[in-house]
Image 1 (cartoon, chains in turn yellow, cyan, blue):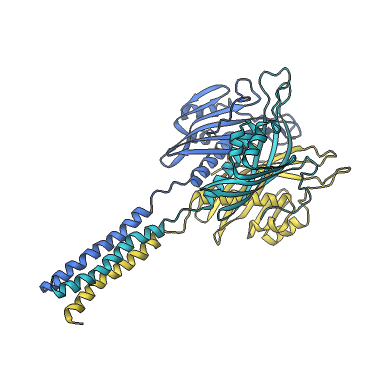
Image 2 (tube, chains in turn cyan, blue, red):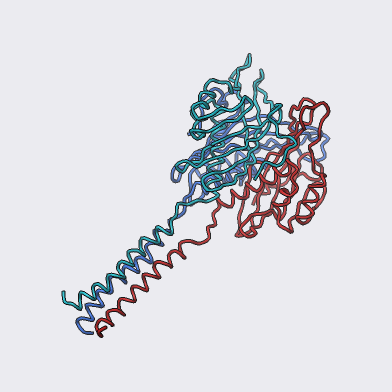
Length: 188
Length: 188
Length: 188
C-alpha cells in the first residue's frame, strides 16, 4: 500500500472503530437489566400466592422455597429460622389446619385469602404488607366458616434475580400477643 | 475524482455503511417487543377481574369476551365449549345468582372475590391459579352472607397481544365432585 | 497536512460524525420514558392498598396522600372535596370504625379487604374498579364478623409520575342509596 493509502486507511479506521463502538455501546447502554416496579410488584404478589397455595395444600417444599436460605418465619409459635427449619415445620404438620370432620363425603379444607398488598422496593430488598383472612369448611356438611384475619409484614431480598422472603411476620387480630390493633400504620 | 480520492472515498464508504448499520441495528436490536412478567401478570389479573365483574353484573358479552374463540369453561355443570356457547350460557342465566328477596328495598347481589393469583408464563401461553369465595345479600334486610369458596385453574393464550382464557376450570370446596380437597398443590 | 490528506481527513469526518450520531441517537431513541401497563397496574393496586392500610389504621395523612390535591371522595355521607378536607374527614374520626368492646384484652379492629381490581389506562388518566368487603372483631372475645361489601369506582390521574385518586366513589350493597344492584357492568 502506498503511503497515502496507508494514511487514508488509518484515517478510515477511526470511524470504523467508532462505528463498532456505536454498534455495541448503545446496545450495552440501551439495554440495562430491566428493573421496573411492575415486575417487582408482580413477582412479589405472585410469591405471596405461591406461599399460600403451598401452605393450604400442605406442600412443605413449596412452602419453604419462597424463603431465602436464612429466611425467618415469625408467627404465633415463635420464630422459625432458616429454610430447612421452615420446611420441617411445615412438613411436621404443626401448621396443618386441614382435618377430616366426621361423616363428610370429602376432606375438609382451610384456605387463606390474601389482599391489599403494598410493596416498597429499595434496590435488591423490599418491604411488603398484606392482609389475610382464613376460612375453612371443617363442618359435617362442608359449609364454610370465615374466621381469623390479620396481616403479614415482610422483608424480601432479590437472590439471583428472584424475590424471596427474608423475614415474614404473621399478625393475627384474633390471637392475643399477635395483634397490631391500636398501633400505627405499618406501611412505609 | 482522482484515483487516490476515489480509493479514499471508497475506503470511507465502509465506515459510513457501518455507521448506518450502527444507527439502525441497535434500534432494531434494542427495542424488541417488550415481554415482561409484570405486564403479563397485570394483564392476567386484570382479565380475572373483568371476568368477575361481568359474571356478577350479568354481562354475557363481557363474560364471553375474556375467553379465546375456542375457550372452554369447566364448571360443576360440565364443560361449555367455545366463546359463543359461553356467552349463551351466561345470557341464559343458568349461572345468574342474583334474585330478589321479598320485602327488600333494592335488588340482591352476589359477589365473587378473587385472590392469591399465581401466574407462570411460557411464551404466548400461561397457567394461573386463583382463589375465589362468594358472598351474597339475598336476605330480607340485605345483610350479607359469606359462603362457598374454591379456586380456578386456568390455561391462557396470548392472542394478538391480548391474554385470554383458553380453559378455565372452577373448583368448589362446597360442592361434591368439584373439590380439590386432599390433593397436591396444583401450582406449577 | 497535504491536500490529499486534508481531503481524506474530511472524507473520514463524515462517518465519524455519523458514528457519533449513531452512538447518541439510538440511546435517545431507544430509551423513551417507559410506560407499561404492568407498571401502571402495579402502582394503582399498590395505591389501593395504601388507601386501605391508612383507613384501617386511622392514618389521616396516609389516607389523604393517595388523592390528588383536588381529589374527591364520594361516599354514603356525601362528597368530600379536596385533599385537605379528606384529611380532616379522616382525622375527625367520622369514618373511624374501630371501637373497644368491653372486657377485651386488646383493641378491636376493622379491616377492609380489596380484590378484583380492573384498570383501564388512557395516557395520564385511568379508571379502576375494585371490590371490597369488611370484617371486624368488635366482639367481647374478638371473634371476627364478616359484614358489608361493595365496590369502588375510581378516576385516577398521574401527577409528577405518581398515580393518585382524582375521584373515588364507594358503593355499598348493604346501604340504601349506595348500591349498584341491578345496574350494568361498570367496567369500561
